[in-house]
Length: 396
Image 1 (cartoon, one colour):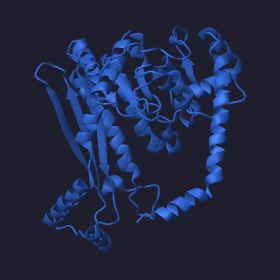
Image 2: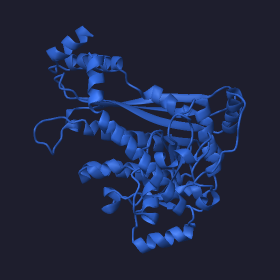
Image 3: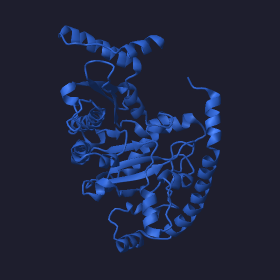
Image 4: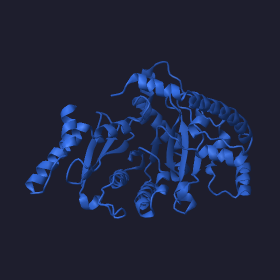
């Protein structure tokens, strides 16, 4: 049980640290303004020259021609409505007849509270055809990971870590998106769905893993990007709360030092004042463990921008394959994302729907373990639940 007086006392004890953090944020704001002023005076060619002089192949990001079309890193949306109904009417008209698909996943990690080590992954998908009559599709796939697929050959201690379940969920989400792309591949281009990936294609976290653990993540993203391009089916990665620093690193590289320690959201938030405003597109050139060791060949095949979709949060990050940028469909695709977020009240409606289909709540986990126990008993497998787990369930 949380005791209010203990929390208040703990916060008061760290007051000076919070004050120091606030002061640092203010000084970063001043530095940001000075560095942006210098950066925005440069053309795309001048930026390229400076990057070449600094011999930095992975400067965080690379500018596209849109940089010179923007005003202070802002490409205004320009539309304004007098009511939410007007916005919704625009959104419904924008996506009319244009399918949008999304995939999300949920998982059950192995636990020591039952005697059989087992994990599970559920992948949900949602397709809205935006056709007369409200045609849509939603479904799930469910996969069990038995002990043989969970064992960690590296540890040698018989533990069943979560990483295999996490990895399988990520790969399965990518595979399901590829399945959706392939399923609509023979349709006319305008009938192929915009496919939403809930996350980033730039998987820096894999650089912290052992190579054999990272490889399935790398392969899944490479295949997903390739399948999108080969089938000319638009693919967008949506990151609602990004802590990336790719644009910040570009500015630091070109006009620093001193260097900013902000996130891209902190850099761009005040530059995108109105709903729907976005930054120019950049090509990703993130400097991380993967790019430094030659594993991130696909990074520079991904373009990204930031877009204002809520007034009370930093801008969201949109990622897309570079082929989609070259196709000339960027404005159309980003308008579809805006429309989805009007319908979904700040988050793409298709992604919300996929999450709702996929999510596994505590009650779902308990039902899974009950079904697992029934299966184990039918098969004559030993199955027991720890006394601690039973006690906790009884108390709650």
